[in-house]
Image (cartoon, rainbow, N blue to C red):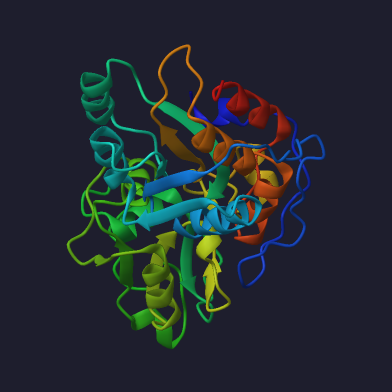
Length: 323
Protein backbone atom coordinates (compact mmCIF):
# COMPACT_ATOMS: atom_id res chain seq x y z
CA UNK A 1 0.00 0.00 0.00
CA UNK A 2 1.49 3.30 -1.03
CA UNK A 3 1.66 6.17 1.43
CA UNK A 4 -0.65 8.41 -0.61
CA UNK A 5 -3.30 5.70 -0.68
CA UNK A 6 -2.84 5.08 3.04
CA UNK A 7 -3.37 8.78 3.65
CA UNK A 8 -6.33 9.37 1.35
CA UNK A 9 -8.65 10.57 4.09
CA UNK A 10 -9.86 14.17 4.31
CA UNK A 11 -7.21 16.69 5.25
CA UNK A 12 -7.22 17.96 8.80
CA UNK A 13 -5.94 21.20 10.25
CA UNK A 14 -2.54 22.29 8.95
CA UNK A 15 0.32 21.97 11.42
CA UNK A 16 2.81 24.75 12.00
CA UNK A 17 6.12 23.43 13.28
CA UNK A 18 7.86 25.27 16.06
CA UNK A 19 11.08 24.79 17.97
CA UNK A 20 10.89 22.01 20.51
CA UNK A 21 8.88 18.82 20.30
CA UNK A 22 5.20 19.76 20.52
CA UNK A 23 3.74 21.21 17.34
CA UNK A 24 1.29 24.09 17.29
CA UNK A 25 -1.82 23.84 15.16
CA UNK A 26 -1.96 20.04 14.88
CA UNK A 27 -5.24 18.68 16.19
CA UNK A 28 -6.44 15.15 16.80
CA UNK A 29 -9.26 14.03 14.52
CA UNK A 30 -12.36 14.43 16.76
CA UNK A 31 -13.61 11.03 15.61
CA UNK A 32 -10.57 9.31 17.16
CA UNK A 33 -11.86 6.86 19.82
CA UNK A 34 -11.27 7.34 23.54
CA UNK A 35 -9.42 4.60 25.38
CA UNK A 36 -11.54 2.53 27.77
CA UNK A 37 -9.60 0.92 30.59
CA UNK A 38 -10.30 -2.77 31.05
CA UNK A 39 -9.50 -5.54 33.53
CA UNK A 40 -7.02 -8.38 33.46
CA UNK A 41 -4.16 -6.41 31.94
CA UNK A 42 -0.77 -7.33 33.43
CA UNK A 43 2.56 -8.85 32.51
CA UNK A 44 5.65 -7.88 30.53
CA UNK A 45 6.01 -6.26 27.13
CA UNK A 46 9.26 -5.84 25.26
CA UNK A 47 9.74 -3.42 22.36
CA UNK A 48 12.82 -3.66 20.13
CA UNK A 49 13.28 -1.66 16.95
CA UNK A 50 13.20 1.86 15.56
CA UNK A 51 15.22 4.73 17.03
CA UNK A 52 12.80 7.17 15.37
CA UNK A 53 9.99 5.71 17.47
CA UNK A 54 12.08 5.32 20.61
CA UNK A 55 10.80 8.40 22.46
CA UNK A 56 7.22 7.77 21.37
CA UNK A 57 7.33 4.17 22.57
CA UNK A 58 8.73 5.35 25.90
CA UNK A 59 6.01 8.00 26.35
CA UNK A 60 3.28 5.55 25.37
CA UNK A 61 4.68 3.00 27.81
CA UNK A 62 4.80 5.49 30.68
CA UNK A 63 1.19 6.58 30.15
CA UNK A 64 -0.01 3.00 29.71
CA UNK A 65 1.66 1.90 32.93
CA UNK A 66 -0.16 4.63 34.85
CA UNK A 67 -3.37 2.85 33.91
CA UNK A 68 -1.96 -0.62 34.57
CA UNK A 69 0.70 -0.51 37.34
CA UNK A 70 1.23 -4.29 37.09
CA UNK A 71 2.56 -3.97 33.56
CA UNK A 72 6.29 -3.76 32.81
CA UNK A 73 7.33 -2.40 29.41
CA UNK A 74 10.93 -2.33 28.24
CA UNK A 75 11.85 -0.23 25.20
CA UNK A 76 15.02 -0.58 23.13
CA UNK A 77 15.52 1.55 20.03
CA UNK A 78 18.66 0.84 18.00
CA UNK A 79 17.16 0.82 14.52
CA UNK A 80 14.30 -0.67 12.51
CA UNK A 81 16.44 -3.56 11.25
CA UNK A 82 16.62 -4.90 14.83
CA UNK A 83 12.82 -5.36 15.00
CA UNK A 84 12.30 -8.38 12.69
CA UNK A 85 15.02 -10.57 14.29
CA UNK A 86 13.64 -9.79 17.76
CA UNK A 87 10.09 -10.72 16.75
CA UNK A 88 11.37 -13.91 15.10
CA UNK A 89 13.44 -14.85 18.17
CA UNK A 90 10.54 -14.07 20.49
CA UNK A 91 12.58 -11.57 22.50
CA UNK A 92 10.01 -8.84 21.83
CA UNK A 93 6.27 -8.59 21.30
CA UNK A 94 6.42 -5.14 19.69
CA UNK A 95 8.59 -4.31 16.67
CA UNK A 96 8.47 -0.55 15.96
CA UNK A 97 9.75 0.32 12.47
CA UNK A 98 10.07 3.58 10.54
CA UNK A 99 9.82 1.62 7.27
CA UNK A 100 8.03 -1.46 6.01
CA UNK A 101 9.70 -4.82 6.43
CA UNK A 102 11.83 -5.89 3.49
CA UNK A 103 10.81 -8.98 1.54
CA UNK A 104 13.68 -10.99 2.97
CA UNK A 105 12.67 -10.02 6.53
CA UNK A 106 9.07 -11.07 5.91
CA UNK A 107 10.23 -14.36 4.42
CA UNK A 108 12.33 -15.17 7.50
CA UNK A 109 9.38 -14.27 9.73
CA UNK A 110 7.01 -16.48 7.72
CA UNK A 111 9.52 -19.35 7.76
CA UNK A 112 9.53 -19.20 11.58
CA UNK A 113 5.80 -18.76 12.21
CA UNK A 114 4.04 -20.00 9.10
CA UNK A 115 2.23 -16.71 8.58
CA UNK A 116 3.11 -13.11 7.74
CA UNK A 117 3.74 -10.36 10.34
CA UNK A 118 0.97 -7.89 11.11
CA UNK A 119 1.85 -4.25 10.44
CA UNK A 120 0.03 -1.58 12.45
CA UNK A 121 0.31 2.09 11.46
CA UNK A 122 0.65 4.15 14.64
CA UNK A 123 1.69 7.69 13.61
CA UNK A 124 2.77 9.87 10.68
CA UNK A 125 6.13 11.51 10.12
CA UNK A 126 7.41 14.15 7.76
CA UNK A 127 11.02 13.00 7.48
CA UNK A 128 12.91 16.30 7.57
CA UNK A 129 16.09 17.58 5.96
CA UNK A 130 17.71 19.81 8.58
CA UNK A 131 20.19 22.65 8.26
CA UNK A 132 21.65 24.82 11.01
CA UNK A 133 19.23 27.52 12.21
CA UNK A 134 21.65 30.23 10.95
CA UNK A 135 21.88 28.74 7.45
CA UNK A 136 19.92 30.93 4.98
CA UNK A 137 18.76 27.94 2.91
CA UNK A 138 14.99 27.48 3.23
CA UNK A 139 14.23 24.97 0.49
CA UNK A 140 15.71 22.40 -1.89
CA UNK A 141 14.59 19.94 -4.52
CA UNK A 142 15.11 16.21 -4.00
CA UNK A 143 17.64 16.13 -6.88
CA UNK A 144 19.66 18.78 -4.98
CA UNK A 145 19.39 16.78 -1.74
CA UNK A 146 20.54 13.72 -3.67
CA UNK A 147 23.50 15.69 -5.12
CA UNK A 148 24.60 16.57 -1.58
CA UNK A 149 24.15 13.16 0.05
CA UNK A 150 24.77 10.69 -2.78
CA UNK A 151 27.84 9.72 -4.78
CA UNK A 152 25.74 8.13 -7.53
CA UNK A 153 23.43 11.17 -8.03
CA UNK A 154 20.59 9.26 -9.66
CA UNK A 155 18.47 12.42 -9.35
CA UNK A 156 20.46 13.83 -12.26
CA UNK A 157 21.85 16.95 -10.57
CA UNK A 158 25.54 17.85 -10.69
CA UNK A 159 27.56 17.17 -7.57
CA UNK A 160 27.13 19.66 -4.70
CA UNK A 161 29.99 19.87 -2.21
CA UNK A 162 29.94 23.50 -0.98
CA UNK A 163 27.13 25.73 0.23
CA UNK A 164 27.87 28.13 -2.61
CA UNK A 165 26.91 25.37 -5.06
CA UNK A 166 23.68 25.05 -3.09
CA UNK A 167 22.86 28.72 -3.72
CA UNK A 168 24.26 30.31 -0.56
CA UNK A 169 26.09 33.66 -0.75
CA UNK A 170 28.52 35.25 1.72
CA UNK A 171 31.10 33.60 3.94
CA UNK A 172 29.19 30.30 4.23
CA UNK A 173 29.32 29.85 0.43
CA UNK A 174 32.94 28.68 0.52
CA UNK A 175 32.33 26.15 3.28
CA UNK A 176 32.27 22.45 2.39
CA UNK A 177 28.89 20.90 3.25
CA UNK A 178 29.16 18.74 6.36
CA UNK A 179 26.80 15.76 5.97
CA UNK A 180 25.17 13.92 8.90
CA UNK A 181 23.17 10.72 8.54
CA UNK A 182 22.18 7.44 10.15
CA UNK A 183 23.81 4.02 10.02
CA UNK A 184 22.51 1.12 7.94
CA UNK A 185 20.61 -0.44 10.87
CA UNK A 186 18.23 2.52 10.69
CA UNK A 187 14.93 2.38 8.84
CA UNK A 188 15.30 6.11 8.25
CA UNK A 189 18.64 5.42 6.51
CA UNK A 190 16.90 3.00 4.17
CA UNK A 191 13.87 5.20 3.57
CA UNK A 192 16.00 8.26 2.80
CA UNK A 193 18.20 6.19 0.46
CA UNK A 194 15.12 4.99 -1.43
CA UNK A 195 13.18 8.26 -1.62
CA UNK A 196 15.73 11.09 -1.46
CA UNK A 197 18.68 9.34 -3.12
CA UNK A 198 16.55 7.61 -5.76
CA UNK A 199 17.91 4.26 -4.51
CA UNK A 200 21.47 5.52 -5.00
CA UNK A 201 24.46 5.20 -2.66
CA UNK A 202 25.51 7.55 0.12
CA UNK A 203 28.74 9.50 -0.13
CA UNK A 204 31.63 8.15 1.92
CA UNK A 205 31.84 11.54 3.65
CA UNK A 206 28.48 11.11 5.46
CA UNK A 207 29.05 11.19 9.22
CA UNK A 208 26.97 8.22 10.32
CA UNK A 209 25.27 8.70 13.69
CA UNK A 210 23.85 6.05 16.05
CA UNK A 211 20.55 7.88 16.55
CA UNK A 212 18.23 10.62 15.33
CA UNK A 213 19.08 12.95 18.20
CA UNK A 214 22.79 12.69 17.31
CA UNK A 215 22.07 13.80 13.74
CA UNK A 216 20.15 16.86 14.92
CA UNK A 217 22.81 17.70 17.50
CA UNK A 218 25.52 17.46 14.84
CA UNK A 219 23.71 19.94 12.58
CA UNK A 220 22.95 22.20 15.57
CA UNK A 221 26.65 22.50 16.40
CA UNK A 222 27.86 22.79 12.80
CA UNK A 223 26.96 25.90 10.75
CA UNK A 224 27.93 23.93 7.61
CA UNK A 225 25.90 20.89 8.60
CA UNK A 226 22.97 19.16 6.91
CA UNK A 227 21.21 15.98 8.03
CA UNK A 228 17.94 14.06 8.00
CA UNK A 229 15.74 12.82 10.82
CA UNK A 230 12.13 12.35 11.86
CA UNK A 231 10.29 15.60 12.54
CA UNK A 232 9.79 14.58 16.17
CA UNK A 233 13.49 15.25 16.80
CA UNK A 234 13.37 18.86 15.66
CA UNK A 235 14.88 21.42 18.05
CA UNK A 236 15.31 25.18 18.03
CA UNK A 237 18.92 24.73 16.84
CA UNK A 238 17.94 23.47 13.39
CA UNK A 239 15.64 24.37 10.52
CA UNK A 240 13.53 21.83 8.63
CA UNK A 241 13.63 23.04 5.04
CA UNK A 242 10.84 22.84 2.44
CA UNK A 243 11.28 20.20 -0.26
CA UNK A 244 10.26 19.97 -3.91
CA UNK A 245 9.91 16.63 -5.68
CA UNK A 246 11.54 17.93 -8.88
CA UNK A 247 14.09 20.58 -9.80
CA UNK A 248 12.20 23.85 -10.34
CA UNK A 249 9.05 22.50 -8.70
CA UNK A 250 7.15 23.97 -5.78
CA UNK A 251 8.80 23.27 -2.41
CA UNK A 252 6.47 22.34 0.43
CA UNK A 253 7.20 22.60 4.16
CA UNK A 254 6.93 19.43 6.27
CA UNK A 255 3.62 20.31 7.92
CA UNK A 256 0.55 18.22 8.64
CA UNK A 257 -1.48 19.51 5.72
CA UNK A 258 1.27 18.68 3.23
CA UNK A 259 1.70 15.23 4.71
CA UNK A 260 -2.00 14.45 4.41
CA UNK A 261 -2.39 15.83 0.90
CA UNK A 262 0.75 14.08 -0.37
CA UNK A 263 2.63 17.25 -1.37
CA UNK A 264 5.54 16.82 1.04
CA UNK A 265 7.78 14.23 -0.69
CA UNK A 266 9.25 12.56 2.41
CA UNK A 267 6.02 11.86 4.30
CA UNK A 268 5.78 8.38 5.78
CA UNK A 269 3.88 6.18 8.19
CA UNK A 270 5.49 4.81 11.35
CA UNK A 271 4.63 1.23 12.27
CA UNK A 272 4.59 -1.35 15.03
CA UNK A 273 4.87 -4.95 13.84
CA UNK A 274 3.45 -7.81 15.90
CA UNK A 275 3.16 -11.59 15.76
CA UNK A 276 -0.53 -12.32 15.26
CA UNK A 277 -1.86 -15.73 14.29
CA UNK A 278 -4.53 -15.60 11.58
CA UNK A 279 -8.10 -15.60 12.90
CA UNK A 280 -6.86 -15.37 16.49
CA UNK A 281 -6.84 -12.23 18.66
CA UNK A 282 -3.61 -10.74 19.90
CA UNK A 283 -2.59 -11.49 23.49
CA UNK A 284 -4.51 -9.17 25.83
CA UNK A 285 -1.55 -7.03 26.91
CA UNK A 286 -0.28 -6.45 23.36
CA UNK A 287 -3.80 -5.73 22.09
CA UNK A 288 -4.57 -3.25 24.84
CA UNK A 289 -1.29 -1.40 24.42
CA UNK A 290 -1.89 -0.95 20.69
CA UNK A 291 -5.51 0.04 21.32
CA UNK A 292 -4.22 2.72 23.68
CA UNK A 293 -1.68 3.92 21.09
CA UNK A 294 -4.51 4.28 18.56
CA UNK A 295 -6.79 6.13 20.99
CA UNK A 296 -7.27 9.85 21.43
CA UNK A 297 -4.90 9.84 24.40
CA UNK A 298 -2.29 7.85 22.50
CA UNK A 299 -2.46 10.15 19.48
CA UNK A 300 -2.20 13.23 21.72
CA UNK A 301 1.15 11.80 22.85
CA UNK A 302 2.12 11.59 19.16
CA UNK A 303 1.53 15.33 18.80
CA UNK A 304 3.33 16.18 22.04
CA UNK A 305 6.37 14.25 20.80
CA UNK A 306 6.42 16.29 17.61
CA UNK A 307 4.97 13.71 15.23
CA UNK A 308 1.63 13.70 13.40
CA UNK A 309 -1.56 11.85 14.40
CA UNK A 310 -3.43 9.39 12.22
CA UNK A 311 -6.81 10.38 10.78
CA UNK A 312 -9.73 8.54 12.44
CA UNK A 313 -10.56 6.53 9.30
CA UNK A 314 -7.02 5.17 9.21
CA UNK A 315 -7.17 4.38 12.94
CA UNK A 316 -10.39 2.43 12.39
CA UNK A 317 -8.62 0.22 9.85
CA UNK A 318 -5.65 -0.33 12.16
CA UNK A 319 -7.88 -1.30 15.07
CA UNK A 320 -9.52 -3.84 12.81
CA UNK A 321 -6.15 -5.55 12.36
CA UNK A 322 -5.95 -6.24 16.10
CA UNK A 323 -9.02 -8.47 16.18
